[in-house]
Each structure stands twice: as C-alpha cells, then as structure tokens.
Image 1 (spheres, rainbow, N blue to C red):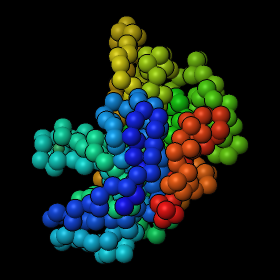
Image 2: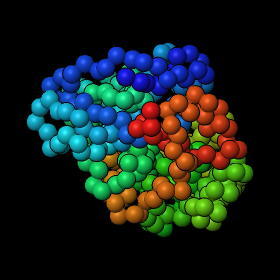
Image 3: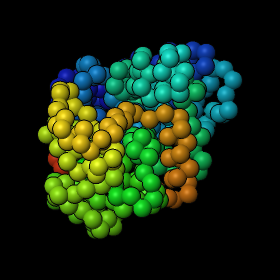
Length: 329
Ligand SMILES: [Zn+2]
Ligand SMILES: [Zn+2]
C-alpha cells in the first residue's frame, strides 16, 4: 500500500510499505479518507519536532473509515470516524488520574510511531469517535481544535474576563476557536500581516494587534513556541491572572521572578488533549459554535504533497489548514 513518508530532513516521498498486520484484540483496521497537516508535521519536516525520527509516516489529524474490528465495539465496518491519536497506556498513575494526554508512556500517531498518511493502519478501538454527522474535513480538524480547547480548559476562562492569545498559527487559531462562546473579550497578537488580515477580514476578530506590548488580560495563552515571546508573556498578565503555555520549543526559556511573584501569576502548561476535549469539540462543531470551514485550503492529493510542503511552510502564502485527500491515490 502507499504511504507518505518523511524519509529525511525536508524530504517527503510517496512510497510502498507493507500492509498493516491484522488488528490485535481491542483494535480496528481503518482506511484513511482525509488527513490534516499539522504545525507539528511542518516542524518534523524541518527537523524541529523533538520526538520524530526518520523514516516516519506522519499524520494524526484523521477522518477514517472502519474496515474491520477485533473485539467488542460500538462501531461498525463502513462507519466513518475520527481518531484520538494520543495513544496512552491506560495504567500509569497519570492515566489513572484521567490525564491521558500527558501519559508517561504516551505514543502519538505520526510522531513517536507511524501515523495515518497511509492507506490503512490499525488503531485502538477506544481511540475512535463517532462522526455525529460531521463532514470528513471537519473530522480531520477535531484533533487540532482539541489542542486549543484543552489549553482553554486549562486556563478556565470566566465570562467578562479579557483573554490575550499570543500567536495565531494553527494552535493559536484552535485556541481562538476554544474561546468562542466563553464570554471573554479576546485580543489576538500576531506578527504576520497575512494572518492578521485573515483574523479580521475572514474570521471577524476586531481586536487584533501586531505585538502584545502594552496589553493586559486576566488570561494569557501563549501559542508562539518562541522562547523570547514565552519569556515576555507574563508582562501581559494582570495581578492574580493565569498564563497558559500551549506552544513549546526544544530549549529553555526564562521567567522574571520578581514580576511572577509580585503578580502571583498562575502558570500552566497544556499538552495534547484527552477524551473530554474530543467530546467537547465534536459537540461544539455539531452545534456550529465552532466552524473551521474558513481554514480549509483546496484538498491536496498524496502525489502533490512532497511539492506542497515548502508552500505550506511559507506563512505569506496564507494557507491555514492543508488537508490531504487520501482517496485520490
Ligand atoms: Zn495536530
Ligand atoms: Zn499512561
């Protein structure tokens, strides 16, 4: 079968790989229909994803069709579902506490292990979610939306508060979607003029600034992954406020102790998402509280992906969410 493999730095190839083994107990064999390209796939391509080794089949933003099931399941062959790609162990203390998103033995599809940019693969049945009437493209955006919703849940926004989102890349946009309907007043700080235009003209945000300088909010969510921006973020948190870091980067960053202390800032980190986030996002998509339609670029065929990566990586091209149509092989 065909798979899109990251074979080396900045090299993606459509290759032939062996068919997956029959699903072990508790697993399903699934067929990839649509797959979103994540910021982390772009980082992996550039060698900036710390957990990815070559060769790796990328892809974790998935709309798939169930082909067969090995074990009791509330799903049927032929059903289209979305996949929670965060494969948690289920029995470490963190999993037992319900924090499966940061399981000590976490394996993420397309990151630690091969992912969904292939025709067929197996996945635990427990990680499938019913489509609930969503389109294939919407199903492929559930996972990235979950990253933003999890960060928002960590920050626990209260109606009437101000929220400042720093960085409106893929994660920042998912955070903005997560803040929708929470009753906070949102300001977005984003450096790219193309992305600022998208925020104001397409998404209708009215408070969009180039720099966070001078802003103050009860809840600040950093989605930059830039050490300089992450160090500066506490400046924008009110006394007694909360700061959530959802962006990450491979090195250290510093926090100015006197300021953190004086303002008694609550600092939270946000990693991945868990089943609660998947349920919440699917229901918000169903209710149209969140609508990712403006994110979608025209669908890409697998054969076009290798040539498309440099385009997707150029922020001024204005591509928000590339989606690969894996049925067009
Ligand atoms: Zn993703
Ligand atoms: Zn675990």
